[in-house]
Length: 221
Image 1 (cartoon, rainbow, N blue to C red):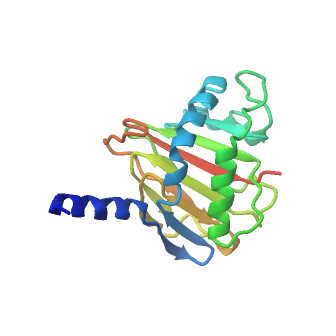
Image 2 (image 1 turned 45 degrees about the horizontal axis):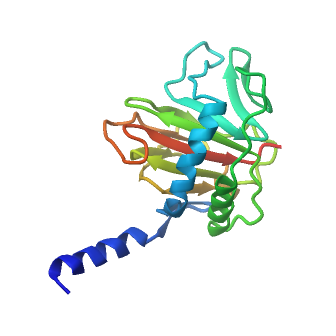
């Protein structure tokens, strides 16, 4: 075996390696956990976007979000001047959101179980598309009925800085770099922690070009 072959062997082994990082009780990052699912996810995303295209929604305050988004599952998260809410229908088409692909559900459930949240049954997946400069301000996920269910967030494509704060908006957040295939899961005592994403920096990835795609799974009803 040549030296080059040896190095390639170690490179392949490293790419298969996964590990966990605890952020606080109830929250952890599952590094590279989503990588085995990404080929199927890519195909599914194309189908979803054809049925329910990405769009930059308007907040109740009249501001256009910098992140473009769509949804799949029984419910989708929407915002307009009347407020934030979940709806079973896409307000742009009047049709039901696309069904959640089996690969999405499998990944969400396996990740939740890995983080010790068994029996997770998400009925909504928010799909966010970040381009250069797009960001998500600190917020809580609190429009769901059952806070006993965790949040599962899957990062795809360009790396980003995920902010994970405390239970008060004024608590200083941790800054965590999330890369392609990383999954963040939080629930239990961490379920209502504030979180967000810093403005996306210029970069490129074979999965999504210059974009970052984020899948966020929730149990809404």
